[in-house]
Image (tube, rainbow, N blue to C red; front, top):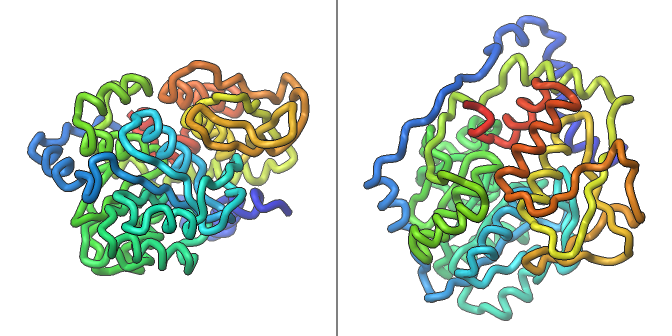
Length: 381
């Protein structure tokens, strides 16, 4: 059994066994709430930005930390891609060890520095540390390093379930925060002094920021851009990404474990003989954000996994200098199982296009199932 099946069939298997109880399934809400979240008050927006200015340098140093064994694809690559696009900080993709980082549910990259190398270059620590969701929340090297960075004055940003890593380092004790909808109860149970905040995609409290699920990395990074270089700069980057809005508005009740979600997980997991390996081509200069969103979405259907491929061995350098490692070295991929080239489509459109493709291939329930995992508000209105 592959690592991917272990990671991504777990929810389906758990749901299947729980469903045998019968009543449990019918106790779930049939669907989540819909509707549009109200705007964020301007004074709250101003307070958020005022809590995030660079603590040390005019041009800040930002580390995005991931574990080599497994780090969430979009959390890691979206954060890197947006901050590098903005060109308002020195950004480094970091891991405990030099070498490859296995992203989940898809893609592989090379760390640009180990934590030891980063520390040697930046003895005063980072201005910001971005913490994506990780395969394990308690990696000792990561927790010690996060504590040290916080003690040196870094602002720590837990993206999605990266909040669990931040909490395991003791940095959310007594603070307000949030996380991916699926992990809220677990986070509150393990860290009872955390003050959970609903209906916000991002929350900042005394040098620690946290976000809701995966796609919240986009507004979070734009908020950092605004805090560092002003709202006009953030709006410019947002326009480049294809976003009309990027604030913290959110409807938490639109994301929950529903009967439809559970049934789709069960049905797609049980249809294992229909599972497909879909190819996404790597090309020099490929946009990290669009690639992450497409590969992530197609690898969350429980019907397919996106594999990257390249016609030549060795790493492919992305738009912003990240080295991408292909899963397969092949000249081409069968047309019926090849995903459309990333091309020049802006990132926000890339995700919408992927969800539309998933709906055509596997049906609307699976597209909604993926959007729910990504905690993507545009797909829940």
